[in-house]
Image (cartoon, rainbow over all chains, first blue to last red; front, side):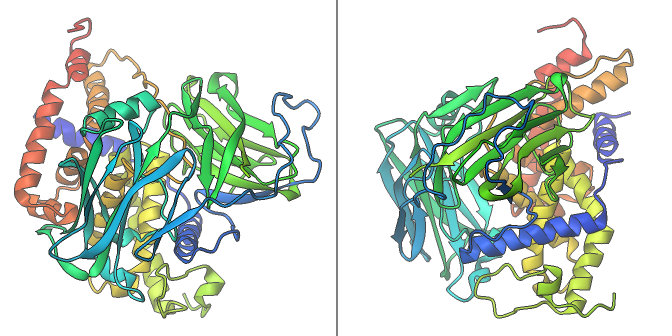
Length: 348
Length: 192
């Protein structure tokens, strides 16, 4: 058997027999993502149903910590219900968050994809950067950009490209990041010639798949870059930012819980008593498997099996009936896998 | 399907801002649902080979289908190559785009169970080595050697030249041949 035959066999063996979600459940999840995309583009916030990556759950007034629950989750400080909005900066009609999470906007440029495509320079005020790319057709016809890719280079090194068919959020944020803890991210940027205090040169280019650089003055492309500070908590190897931006509000880390699967396949935590909205991140670090975010012991539709290491977020409010949130792993998760929940309170 | 529900009734909405269409024709919606019913298993397999994670594969598939939905009415021919292209491009963009609300984590080593069957050991190490390939090379390997696409077809999916596909494929295979952990796995006790 040749090496290529072995390769084909290994690929086939792993691809076969995957558990499939029921069609209705999958269609329901896709509908949820379509709704999320629609809301993200139109800027409507707050009407959430069963979504793939975010859900609105509610907290019973005075739910606090139920008897027998862990007592190390503090109450949230009595702040405003939803926190102060993150300032927004506009350039060429495109909105960007100025200080999402621990990031600070330090450079941006947007222009038509004509012969001269956008490039700009800024000084790296941190060794770790985050970025976002923008690509859209003219107003009223944003999908005109769908056939293209937008690509970016940093100091002449390719950073990456993205399909323009993916659309743009209504407000750009610090979404593009290298994974891992701060030191690892700084090393990655070092490889692209980025050093704290030194100038960084960015070029953005419209590309046509299979044909290379493209010119289409109807399409606007651009990028924004953020300096990211070393401001994170590492709990048993899980990196959590101290401040996290979510839908235009910054949230500060309030409490975390980490549990190895060896100590139980379900991590369940009472929602802290709070007179405010809370953000909860959940997830796992470890082996692949099916992980479910739960509220009051019930899996939230659309989350099951849609996790990856690092988790996702849900928004908690003070009215309603949720008293516990949790994350559970199915039997395929290795015992060394760790489940986590992290609560964030809004920054005012 | 004979229901005459509106998009608002069923949850199907156009994702493009400013788009005049308020509801999708029933035939269009049926076409999309039929496509999901008939092709999502195959697309999930591709997504799994790219991500090596069932949860991420499902999310990648759903994200790609949601993106495809917004352009569904513009697809005249077989939609599968279009959706596959979205899937691969979305995967390629994930290495640098944070999943909403995600907190990056340290990857834990995933121990591979030992086996007396050398072929099984080889296969396990090869699977792990595939996971260490750069994003682009992994995509080429999956499309060439699992999907059995020609170099020209892979080039169309990835939006690059056939020459790039050829060189990426050669680099990927070379990397697999000299993967140190794969070599070590083939020679138990050899820690070099």
